[in-house]
Image 1 (cartoon, rainbow, N blue to C red):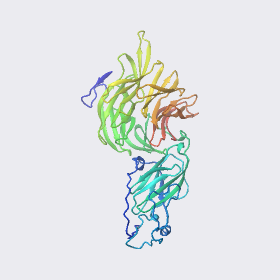
Image 2: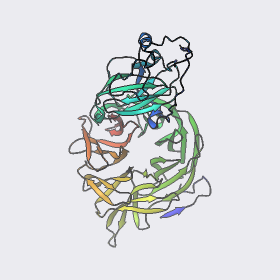
Image 3: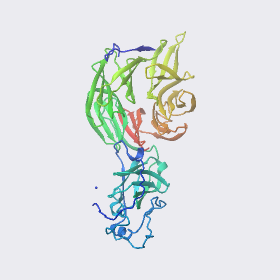
Image 4: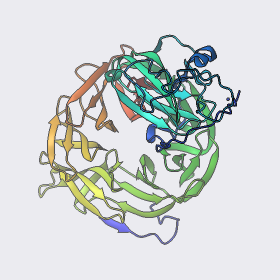
Length: 531
């Protein structure tokens, strides 16, 4: 290992009417619940949301029922859980006139609206999406509870307007009939309404659409975003909506070779080589340039950028300046709009290695960088031997070994971290393999016969999505392996017009939609698959 500390950023060569009631009020204890947890406020823009607007009784129905006193706990066993009982004091209905005794209801049900996607009939959800439950209440309420009645589950409670919660229709496991209910809770009344919903999501991994990019002359890169994906190709940055519509959002000041999304700052990170300089730039999600940085002159190295990965204010950039000559840079970011700076860089490989190659990088949960590494070493008879391993770089750039292959014919190509486990994509004797390791690098299980080579991996739902070329006569296949190492789905993709399809990148958005960038013949494609 050759470790360098850099004194400067220049690399050395190489580098929504109000009802007024005047009846006196009883004093009852108020129940205050905390606001809903994560699902009640989603921090991202949804490209395909389903909105549920919750409403209830008419003014006439309310006038007939103003002598009732609400049970604060409510009856949530069915779609209509309004508690209506006669007054135990006088048996007379409250006319709503101003008096010195009794209590006015805090909620007027005609002010609690209830629709589903603007309708009151059966609603069908046939795409994975975030379902928004929204209750509009005019008047004083303590909270609104949202329920999934079929499953007897409280989805969330909200204690202030806008009253809303969210439920995710994620996969076929969520299919079937459901009834969502909103219950408005006040000091003397509760009122509710429900709506029936049918969830009919398609089989996981089924192709949604294919975007042909035959006009591109340079190899693009892709990253998933909230609501879709983004690509760079040459000096263009584009966004892809979840429905497959491509919009070129920005022209870049250099030819880009790699793209990543920094979720901490919300910025795209773009990297490329221009006029023998290593360049980086930060762009907003709508294509506004925030910063550009010339990292350093690469001279005559013919530097090529291979990969870029981001984690918690840091990102690693992998490049190569020749066959078997990788370079690894680690950058720290200061915040949105701020240029990053190099914290360390490395020329990996042992002294004995005549060739060193890195595969797809990944950060683990602790922020250490993991890399599959393959070294070619000559023995005493000058015969080449391959040694494959997964190495870890800590925050200071110190390297250690995590896993070493005992099979000289095995090559390691990609690594992904999911729920603390390491998944490693490999090939051995022309057969693709997926290894599952614990956090210490101990082998837990392996899956073989995954095409010719398991080239790309991406963490998803406790497991990984994998991509591999030419599986048993198919041009390409994409699959999902769960956290126990079991294949959940596997689909092949064959195009009679194309001789093979190479997986260049694969990523997964926050709802589980899969995006695959491929080289197909002389052009490129982006495919999207159902979660």
